[in-house]
Image (cartoon, rainbow, N blue to C red; front, side):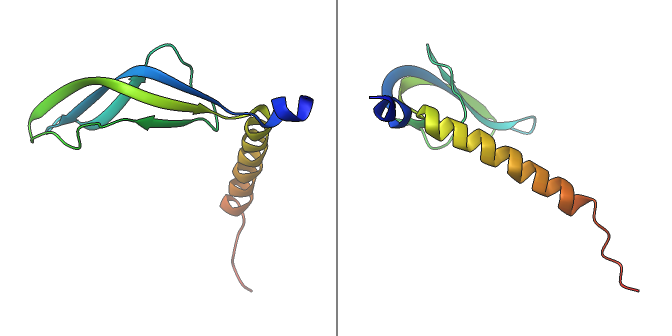
Length: 100
C-alpha cells in the first residue's frame, strides 16, 4: 500500500489561460493554471493552444490543460538530484585550470 502511494501519479484536467505577446517591448508566452499548484516534477500539457501571434500584438486565450502530478518518490528524487547538480556547478565554477 505504501509503495503504491510513493509511486502513484495524479492526472488533473484544469482550465487555463495563455498570454502570448510578440512586440518590441516583450516576447513571452505565459500559462496560468486555475486551482492547481505546480511543484518540481509535475508535467503540464496545454490542449490546442495557438502557436503564434502576429508581430506587435498580444493574445489572451482560454482553454484546458492536463497536469500530471509527480509522485512523492519522483519529487524527492528531483529535489535531491537538483541539489547535487547545483553543487557540481559550484565545483566547476571555482576551479583553476592553470598549468605550470
